[in-house]
Length: 322
Image (tube, rainbow, N blue to C red; front, side, top):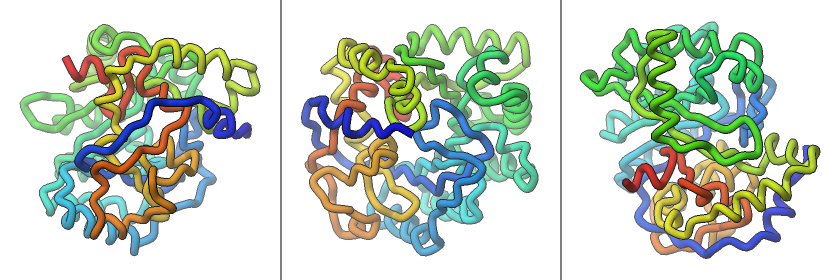
């Protein structure tokens, strides 16, 4: 796999500093039942990295100590971690909002058949990846049969009340472009998703998050192999909008890797870039240390979050601001 970090570090990006911490995003490990080209984590069935029980307990301690509003749980497929349910339940007991980054097909895996019921019982917000509403496009990106399984997973969630605004069970979907291009307008694409999924499959959801592909890990390596890396970076830099800097996720979120080390965002975690202004800061440091005002580690890939309508864990920045 091509390492894109040396290329990205040569590209300057505007300086950023942290605001108040509202979200802790925890990566429980890289094991997943899928291996997707666009996955910036390079997760897959053969990955074995996983968060220890000690670090899981530390996550809960920090949530309480720092009065963090949101726990964003990711992976891999986070549901495959044996401590996933204990972490979710402990966070909910503290009154923390929990978001689960779910790939949908995990809901059908052996041993995971009741995970949807668990998530509903804990009122967990589900952020589910569905890169297109067309079967051929999804299967081309994720593997044959993935779209059908994803629809089955969505129907399972809908049956529990997810996606119905009357229940309070939130189901959001995530879109990524298939190649080196900017994502389309979030509002317009969301309308297309809602209409098509309802008409063809009877599926409903709350909102669509549109994310740009990051030039790192598998996707970045593919760009280098196809000699498309420079062109994609020119595209991102040319579409940069300074007003998006105020809303980028790294200002209010800290990303925790499976070993408990801190990073400014999930993308920096995958590039092994430590928290800005610190040498290998750890989760335990948050018990006594306030991050507000600290510098954020930036490089060329950060243009993926500020290009066009912007991109964050919650989708387009421009739409969110309006």
